[in-house]
Amino acid sequence: MHDEADNASPLVAEIVAALRGRLAFEIVCVDDASRDGTAERLAALAGEVPELRVLAHAGQCGQSTALRTGIGAARGAWIATLDGDGQNDPADIPLLLAERERAGPGLGLVAGWRTTRRDTPVRRWSSRIANAVRGRLLRDDCPDTGCALKLFPRQAFLELPAFDHMHRFLPALFRREGWQVRNVPVNHRPRLRGRSKYGVANRLWVGLVDLAGVAWLLRRHRATTVTERTPARETAP
Image (cartoon, rainbow, N blue to C red; front, side, top):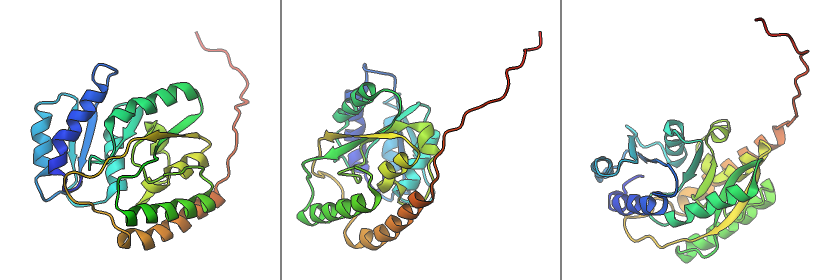
């Protein structure tokens, strides 16, 4: 979260409502050097919500670094991520979990797909173009890689190459490592509180540079299967 004080309490309450009683879970919120009291609001909530843990960056680092901070500190084997602005619906997390159970072994990522966007026309238009260009170049078979609502194994994520803005390319990065990726339609809501930190101007050029870099990573990757052929040895008594 960055400057999302007004969204902290409603979002935590929705996550608790969606998951408490269904499974053991924790909520890890990362405050990315907010200036509006987000960290203090979260700390107060942590006194009321036993599942909530709050981490704070000393300086603003961006979304990808905040994700790695939270995932690195998390204690669960599987991670569900969502934005702190309230536009992702926590009630959809069980849908991702159900898809994981249906898919079985080999699944690395369940990605949310915002089939009905609740953004401005400019943002919808720019995202549509970006998804088309990215999909054609990376062949990641993901219609909405920008949706923050995702589910994946913690260890698999931590083994991915880390770089700024990597969160926009998770489907391609998981496929690069041989994992299966599933896309699940999810709800998308209008922003009710706070102000968006993203716009076309601050995403376009850096997005093109990142896209070229990820395409290079995919071309340079060499996948292989390893089989151990060490002869069996007797175990000492």
